[in-house]
Length: 218
Image 1 (cartoon, rainbow, N blue to C red):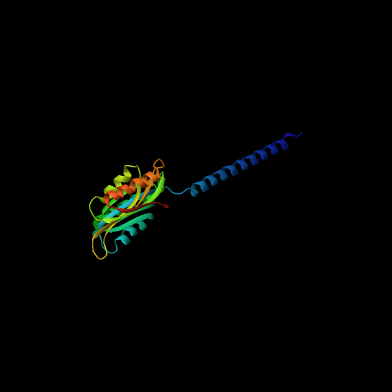
Image 2 (spheres, helix red, strand yellow; image 1 turned 135 degrees about the vertical axis):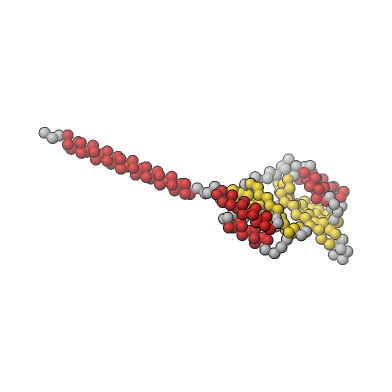
């Protein structure tokens, strides 16, 4: 009597089905892992790049061309003509694999173009400044030490200067050199707004500064 054959056949079939399911599971897991890896963003570096050199037409175009050629993405920038020098400061995001090329290309360009170059690592998301945001605007007759005095006033109260822009201009009719300041600061929660405003008013009166201190929404 042949009684074991059907059971043997069934056992083989069952094992074959189990092996097939296991193989499909392995393939599915591998595919999911691959898709997960592909969905992850490439490692990138955030860099603060500063260039300063003699002003001339085409300077911004040339610097940004080097960055674009290395697939760098300019996230933020400030540029200004200061005397005869043009200053560029940028926040650039670049893939980790492209960073060495970007630094090398920028250094070569800076040497050829007579530029001072600085490259520093940073983060693309700045740490949230604690406290409240205020804007300070001031005008006065130009004289040495204005920025230091204003910065010292807020520094003594642990206020952080986030942005600062100044300029000198000639008053209408008289031609008197005038100084303007526009500044964004972060005021600690522990500092009373009323006390800060009263102290600032007294400070401005002492140094003959026509200024305002108002809440600011970035």
